[in-house]
Image 1 (tube, rainbow, N blue to C red):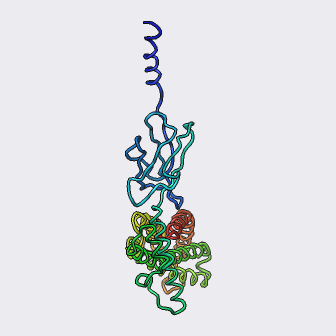
Image 2: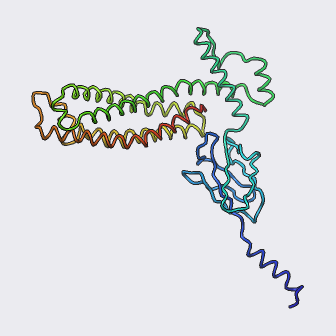
Image 3: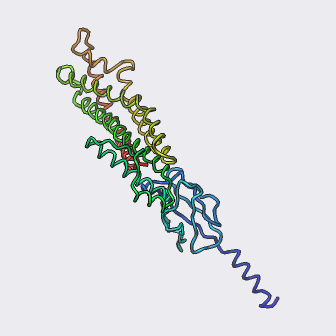
Length: 331
């Protein structure tokens, strides 16, 4: 075979041996958290991008070695905000990871900003004893012109006003209830630490302090636990999808950590276990006090509980910080 005849075979061999590019990256929401539920497509390369369940990272093989790909959303509720128009440059190096940011479509985002402004006006006027209902009041000619220019419906704006109003009422109540529970939990941890073996049976004031703090903790826990379903319902009502499920999920993770891993696993066994150590502590100055050894064991169990609470608070604080972030971005 001559050289000219060999050339096509050599080209085919080289093409066959060339490796297709792989696009590595992470998808974030405009809140800066992994967009694990986003449904995206890479045009001509991936019908749907497979995202990591925790990090929203992906490793997507491409057809050939394109210099750029276009990423689009498969659902109307989100759009690709960055890179602009979803045009993602493909890095020359396999070690480089790209970042894709998704969020609400621009028109929806603008509409919610306008709705939030109306709710703010309603709240401001209420503080001045002026009746103003942002859902029913006539809108200004300027606002009507903006809606027309952006092809937004006034009925949709009114709906978003109701959402924003519900969010404005629910957010501080949820955060305050959670914050009160955590504060009382920290107080209880501190009270346990102040009652080591050998002190509790000698210091009535320390015992009274522990008794008071425990009562305050139980009150805060009951308020926290009893609102679980009500808070979830309000979130799913006033936070449009898909954010509603995400916010409700963050709240549920706070409840699971506080209820299952702290209250039921650490605190409840102290009062309902066998022996009931908190009961023994509270009997110290009563008519039927525990023995000296029983009192010391009970106090030591309280100290151990304080250490476990302290370790658990690290995780709980992280979960609450995340809940604060998603609630702070209304809608």
